[in-house]
Image (tube, rainbow, N blue to C red; front, side, top):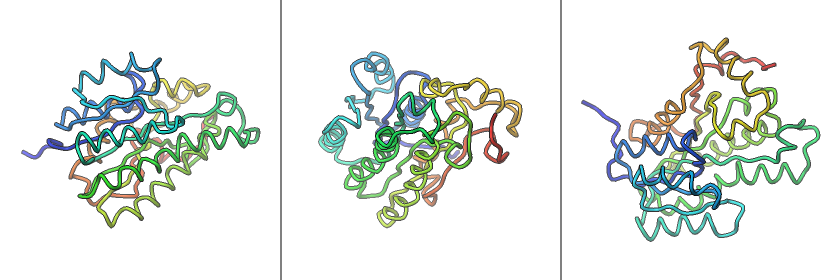
Length: 260
């Protein structure tokens, strides 16, 4: 019987906020498949919500990682180098925008707000790819989270639309540059899932209802389903897949509509 097996693999998961996080479900499935994990938390306020989850997956590395704080991201990778000497896969689930930019029109977004959102949500993945590259001397898998709003207009997604579009373009360019080292780079475009991050989007309940009504599967997506897709991309079952956006959205992306 074939099975997705990550025994002996070392992985980093960045972006867990709580038990509802897509990043947590990715970590859960990585652990269940046998991987050893490094887990990060955003700040001291977030730590009590993440630390119990870290114990559940028996992660030997648990460190703060606010990508806007100089040195924190580098410290995470240095700890991985000292502890394991290598990294097999990375799951990036970091996104942020100022409240006024997320809730307001893109037309009104400030240059500073746009730059901050791009740095946290997109360039942080590029930074992680650079830091992971020397630790993946035998190849590896880099994964990030995107959303359909990167491709088509989704009402109320606002500044995150172009930011996620830049992230998906970065996936393709990183895949092109790192492929010669057998490092795969892919994005998961997750459907509407009720998470802490999603709670910042206005009228999110309407999006969930639209998904149930219009998605081919006539239902929303479970966070665990996104986690299983991440497990697939971390495994040897996808060694020939790179530069892709994998939709885990009950088929909603094929509808090609603007939500109202």
